[in-house]
Amino acid sequence: MIEKLVLYLQYPFVRYAFIVGVLIALCSSLLGVTLVLKRFSFIGDGLSHVAFGAMAIASVMNLSNQMLLVLPVTIVSAVLLLRTGQNTKIKGDAAVAMISVGALAFGYLIMNIFSTSSNLSGDVCSTLFGSTSILTLKERDVWLCMGLSVAVVIIFIVFYNKIFAVTFDESFAKSAGTKADNYNLLIAVVVAVVIVLAMNLVGSLLISALVIFPSLSAMRVFGSFKKVTICSAVLSVVCALTGILISILAGTPVGSTIVAVDVAAFLICCIAGKLTGGMDR
Image (cartoon, rainbow, N blue to C red; front, top):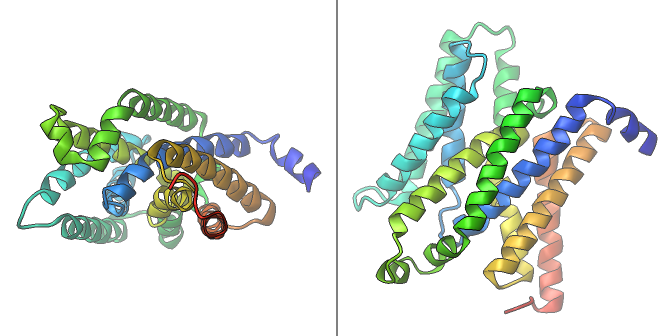
């Protein structure tokens, strides 16, 4: 097994998969804690479907770099989703459902009507579940992912205290002079960037799992925001590495394997939390 792994690591696309997998897992876990605590976990699901629709349009337009269209569209949708979710006539969960289902349906419709691909089912499956895209990354994709991931981490570290305040008590943060709406907008934009990056790893249908499971797992063991965030990041990276490794050695789909490892880690953390009574509670 070790010899087989060493052999695979000689190929650039395998090394790219590990690098991108670690970076995406790290970024996803940082914002996951905030989304779970704000009860807005499914924003990732909604934005992932929007990204799928944008990717379908980019494919039909034969864009050499689909990120140029997918990323701006997803960011704009994140802003609109945040604004719509604050509307008293359309609640947050309804807004997510409305945008996600509509974008998914239009994306698949566009791919069926205008696609010139001879393997439409394979293209859709790869986009939805990330079955092969992580293993077909080019060097420019890796550099782009590295740049965006570094930006996400820096933003999270610089605005950590503000994000913490907005996450736990938005009303108090506003009364204390914090521009909560601006930081909510920042969170939405960063989440959109993470969603677009994660599509190459687990596909649009499994992104929510990558965002939510590490956070929920960490919450089974720890109680403080800082420790939950750190534990979530470590768990997410370890699960991503393990999932990619199993996928390469066993020939299983990358995205599904990573999510399966995340589920196993969640069950282990649940058991550990019950045995120890949870830490810092």
